[in-house]
Image 1: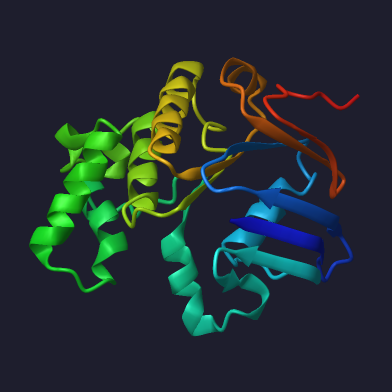
Image 2: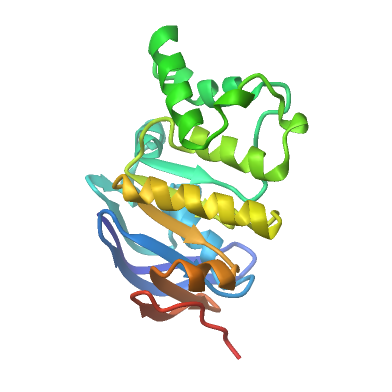
Length: 228
């Protein structure tokens, strides 16, 4: 499903964020991306949803040659790839329902169809009872659950979560992990960037470790790896 061939990324300021990454992620996998801040995790994830373009190498996601996508084709890719951010990125002037519906309105579906889908994903994240709340009326964990609902509204094949538990207390982080596990159980490929060693060890999956832009470890159910 996802293939990176000799992928490197160097920013204009001279920072080598990624260096010759070769990686294959199969459909239906759950993959942790680990490594210290600045290791290249976020850059790698941005390449997958076309927020950034590699300096060298080739990225393929299903039928998409990511390098060669035209600007008008990027929205098509992003219907296949949902994204969850550490800082939630909810629109503060919209309710929880409206934040999720907003992601669907560009499809041109009827209001009835949009409402049905919004309620489905709100049930998945166990917040159907808070559809009329605004972000500032919700806890951090609840805001992240709304952000996940928005990310899966298009029923993407791939869900990318960049430090989804980074701003949360341990109890809320555990709730988010359970939701991501349930999404994975439905067949979605999940790629999660994280520093949370306790979650990685408690919920073992394939673990990829980056260090200074290089892939230094790729192990099935490997647990968290601390670089000395």
